Image (cartoon, rainbow, N blue to C red; front, side, top):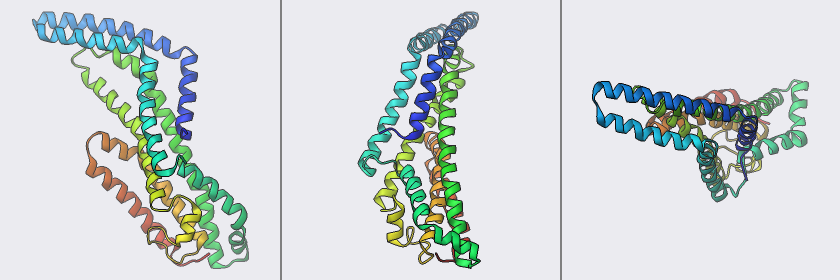
Length: 287
């Protein structure tokens, strides 16, 4: 099973490739690579640096091979990371996209059981108004968060896919080696998004918090929001899950760059801020 954002990205990449865009960019990359090699040869010959001249030749050879197999090479890297994410999801969440299931189950709950809360808002009861507001926010915020994540994943990947040949064409130049390194880091960051997404889903499943019914049966979210009522509880937890999804890009960036402590701190701060805000909002109501 592929996650929705992976399917969206694969569809976009296939359409871009089928339209001939990448073949044109690869041709431009090959010409740029040749020009970069000639300039590197001239630069190193003037400087009398034979070792750097040999290194430029090796970089040219590696970049040329990658350019000749650019689309399958880029997609192979992405598919390898996706396979890892799907393996994690299969092991921890039984192959279920926890966030998609949560969205579907939340819609089912609102359709079947959420109307009393909405009616309470109409009649003016405080608990009904709070419950309806929480459910309404959850119904809007959670799908929007997952949609934003999917669009950003697709856009990020397509940009990297499209500019890759140009970056490879600059590899022989010594002064622009940092550009290639930055590109490689961004490719790693992009592909790490899916793994963190799968890990979050597995974590929720292991903690028995993967579905709205699990949360309602437990009566809390990891000991928080006890006694607030099922409607408010689902609304607040949905907002928490939205925060988790939207912090994935930041966490992935910090992990790839080796800043593990900051990555954990970012996740903790985001969740703590959300918990503090919605505790203060939801503490007085019940649904």
